Length: 65
Image (cartoon, rainbow, N blue to C red; front, side, top):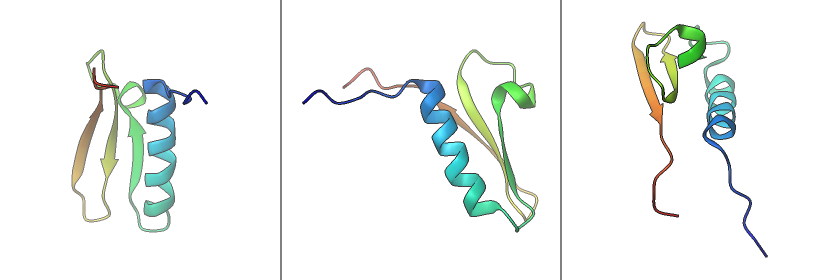
């Protein structure tokens, strides 16, 4: 059986959904690089924690598969 591969966009979406569920009702949140206006060609997420911290997670598929 052939394994289904995720695109970077699909991985970004799934990861954002997981983080959003974890952060909902806490004052935190998640935004994609594109929506946040981050100047990069990479996919990624900006994660806002309830304590005010902000983290940027870059998503790049590994060349090893």
